[in-house]
Image (cartoon, rainbow, N blue to C red; front, side, top):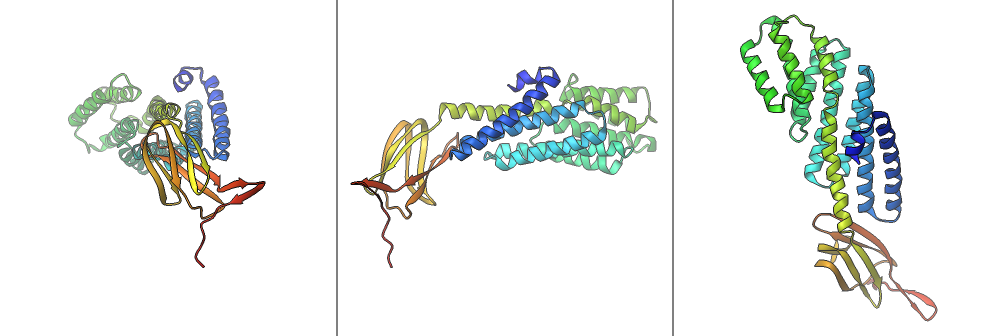
Length: 329
């Protein structure tokens, strides 16, 4: 989906992303009401990423820095919200760094509307530096804007120009000359080769900012693929559960999944065994309450956790009889 929409005319793809985010949010709420927490979270993540793609693409259409600042800050909030619902540590770090990356982009634009505010640009560079640990798109931004900061020192003869040019060339080769960020560095090299030491840094920043506006879309495609892979893995292992209470015991069957499954009430583990696509279980059980929450959890990936509300009762004669553990008075 994301690759198709990325190659679609921008206005059409914006409409599709907005439509997808709304429908996925509705589906996530529907699954949540059914008690399918894991499924709800998967769909919710896809919906939020669609919203993020919509917001990121909208920025490409903005010509005013003020609008871009607002857009990047919104993207940072969305990415941050994704880090809070992720369970995988690596993905949590990636979304957290992605949020930092967007904050850095907002700071760059704040610097621009302030007429090259050096303090804001320094803060942006520091933000990109921290974000580049797991957000690949932050690294070229760090290189470009850190280079601009040094370029601003040229008029004061505070940098070693030959060394600076060499570093610039090595960085461009490292990140790829044909990438948007590589072209930005090439343009800076061109300015130096023409010896435009007195070039307007604010004007250069504005032009370079336009050129690197599309950098984030490649990162989002990779993160979207991770969630899509999770969903694909879920369809291979949907975990179907059939559970009943009868004669002071839980009986039933777990199917369509492989791996270690635990059955719990609260913090008490009632059962833990390996399942190979299908397995029946029989667990002696003394209910504490008329209705118990029975939690089934798949330990390996996909980390599915499903809670079923079970009425601990039987029909005896024509009466519904609940079974409860006798409490010591």
